[in-house]
Image 1: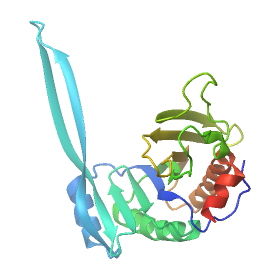
Image 2: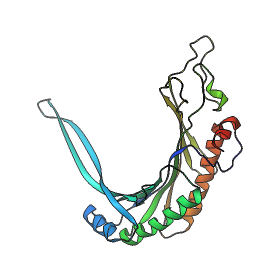
Image 3: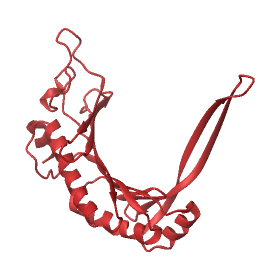
Image 4: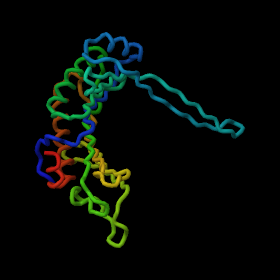
Length: 248
């Protein structure tokens, strides 16, 4: 494992904070749209967010019938510099930071500012889930046939007698922090390698917890900080010190 510290050139392709809620009764997309567009958030509306449903049934005569529906459930907004993407949905709020990632404190400060807009405009009843997720592209300098364990801890290795040049892999764990009840979904994936280029290994760490909190309760930011610490333990525990040095 690598020592935990701030990485100046962290390989983050997206860092996000997500808060899911129970909406106030009767809230509609039209009301959400009017409320958010009227707010002075400093972001511009990029597009609506839609959700689709698909149903499959058998008619009395035994013939299959399908039905698909789509509904607008929120708005996607972008900051003027295109570095932040916010989602204001009927059932929650998400803020994503795109490259270049700066630091956690900046992400939290912006999330708190926009969350205040969400709560003021949409009056959710309670917070039911809090999460932070970091998607990293490690870009490992590996030659074909070299072991990924030089940079990644405990990745399932290739049997010695098998061909050693790895083209793709996928490894996923759902982990439980028994002390807090929080969960971590830890995913490592490689989808193809180009000759002469670094290996684009995706390390995706999603830390979350179910809860029941008042949207105005400042404790949700304390919970989020603990999730960030759990995320850091998972990230630095997955990479080696040799890997961490690539991003300093």
